[in-house]
Image (tube, rainbow, N blue to C red; front, side):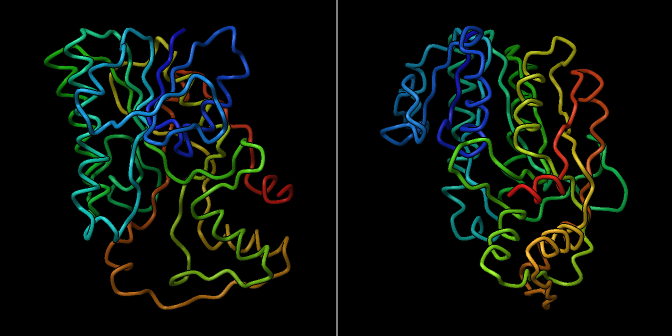
Length: 297
């Protein structure tokens, strides 16, 4: 199976690559990103400016799967750096879609989206739950979801969209994970109390990185999935529960501070995923428990 990974030096891409490399006889990998070298020294890597349409058109899209893992994350930053957010999060995908269109590619495009497209509320969110966009990044992601639907409708380009809530952990030797869990853990490892805005009652779906990678790979390969949007599942935790669990193992405290005005305005509230659609169709099983990961870090 021939697989192209765009944004190959991104955090999720590096982990996906490690999982794919466990069965080298099954996969031929072509990796691309803007840096001169791959962060993990993978040989089948080339430098690419994905914002250069001609450079993207020069790629060979006669592959089975394209992982579109290029992206710029952030919350408040998008308001100041909107040009870059639009370029990296939207224009890059449009360059890829147009190249696939021009080459009549039959590849399936695998695109990661975000919990931030949902209007937060108590209870589990299915894929058709109400949407709300409080940041440039959230709007970027939802725009990309619509681009994929448009190009499938007009040009028959196949896609799968996977919405991700809170990933944690890594399978890359010597690398640190990122995001909420890593922030809490890094504070605790230094012997510092973990700080939370408000009471930390907001709930999230936590997905261990290897489980996330397996979902992206199984979802990409499954013939049961269609051109559609799928939530990736995991465990349901509040931020307070996460912080207290980590604090317990590192013998530190949890402190609660007042919300900064801007942060409060863009806070989404509870975003807990119902992943039944993906799990049933692709046979996804989530192996790691968050508490077990904390114990072993």
